[in-house]
Amino acid sequence: MIDDKRIMEKLNAEPCFRSPDIAVVLGSGLGSLADREENESISYSTIPAFPQPTVEGHGGKIVFAEFGSNNVMMFQGRFHFYEGYPMDVVTLFPRLAALLGARLYLVTNAAGGVNRAFHPGDLMVIRDHLNLMGVNPLIGRNRDELGPRFPDMTHAYDPEFSRKLVTCGKDAGLDLREGVYAALTGPSYETPAEINMLRTMGADAIGMSTVPEVIVARHAGLKVCGISCITNLAAGVTDQPLSHAEVLETGERVKYDFVKIISSFLESVSV
Ligand code: HPA
Image (tube, rainbow, N blue to C red):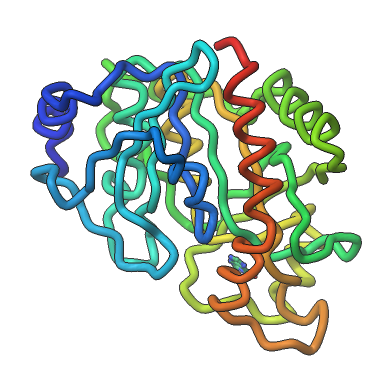
């Protein structure tokens, strides 16, 4: 079991630590938001009990920054179920965010486009999700101090904050997509048959993360909103084979728009 208390003590003792209003997790290839020069950061490797990421494109640090009047804590590099981490590690960020006093959890990720109207480089505000990982991070004894046994998931992605993301996109001259994010465990990409099944089930985008974090965030009473970067068309949409290199390349290509939208959201939102 991960020692949340020990991690919090270490973070609290850091000179750059500020109690967060908003926590942000930056997905594959989307870490550049955290790379502003004025930001101060703590490397995961210096925090006792903190796991270390194993995936290329994931940095491995917590960054503290101010956006407007909001204190923002950014996690650059997440822990995936496919890396073999148990669910308490996969969902460490939203739990820490809640324990440290954040009120909003903003998720970002790289995802494959299942919706045939999507193109690589599109940004999609997540309206809802499908948990197809075959596991729920809240299984086991309920931590009553964090939240209820049976948390409601009707508005898992806060409608008001989601609208605000769309508005920030419009203001930046970008038409954001909206849709349903489905999560499978990975690490293999999907087959074309699986993608057809997912489309029938209502998925617009497919990825290997985010959903466990959102469940834990909602359990702990955090509001949630999120953006998927459509880094590639999902398997079978074209004949192109999929690769992680393509995922990172698209992330690199859209990072300017991505940073612009997320920054203006973080600067102007009140939580
Ligand atoms: N499938 C699953 N996860 C992904 C994809 C995909 O096509 N692209 C980026 N993450």
